[in-house]
Length: 273
Ligand SMILES: Cc1ncc(C[n+]2csc(CCOP(=O)(O)OP(=O)(O)O)c2C)c(N)n1
Image 1 (cartoon, rainbow, N blue to C red):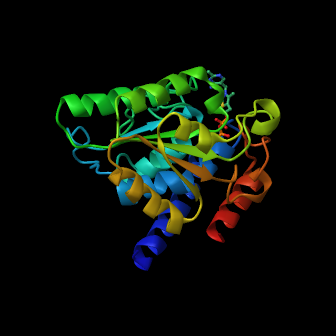
Image 2: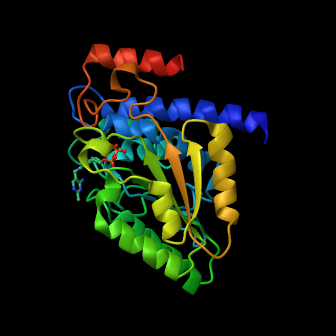
């Protein structure tokens, strides 16, 4: 693996985290914790793995990305702005009237492929996209990011069985396993036990990585895309709020607002990461 690539991706992840802070702004509620926990994964997808082009965003064989845990879309907005889908200044207008950047993903936003926010639906959408690619004889890959709390939704497991039944090897789910959901620890609220083992039992090829180490994320994405015959899942161990000390490992900043002082602290800490 090229160390320059890894260094560049880490810098991109820093830019994405700063973009999340820009999008969150001050005195507006937003989902900081879950956006920061998936920031490295989203960065590696947009700047290493996915075939996409902001200047030709409807090209037929673009890779598909679904943010199934739609509340974490600030990470995707920041990546899309960084990639050139819209000006970075637009991030500051997130969640204001008339702006195409709202609290959950909508397809009117350049680069967004699926409306999500009602948890549990994104993997089914991904199954449909992957089946569509097969029917149209296109070689794109579909990537779906899920939360570990989200896995309590039964529809996720319906999608998981169908993906295996259809042998959808062009589909990869990535579970942002930060161990915390909206109001507490996932294991205290709705314990799913062995998430990796569950996907394996459903017939998926599984990987488990540190979801903040580019050195582990990059090869896992490459290996998952190369698997043939079965769908793949990457279970990524992450920290909710990663990079901002007061938001780390707590549900307090699952959906909360920043004051000017906290915003400045967050920016300082992310720059020092
Ligand atoms: C169907 C549905 N039920 C409830 C919610 C409210 N909700 C938003 S985020 C969230 C917690 C999600 O936890 P997790 O998937 O672990 O997300 P993360 O920790 O990565 O932010 C809940 C319950 C929702 N968006 N959709």
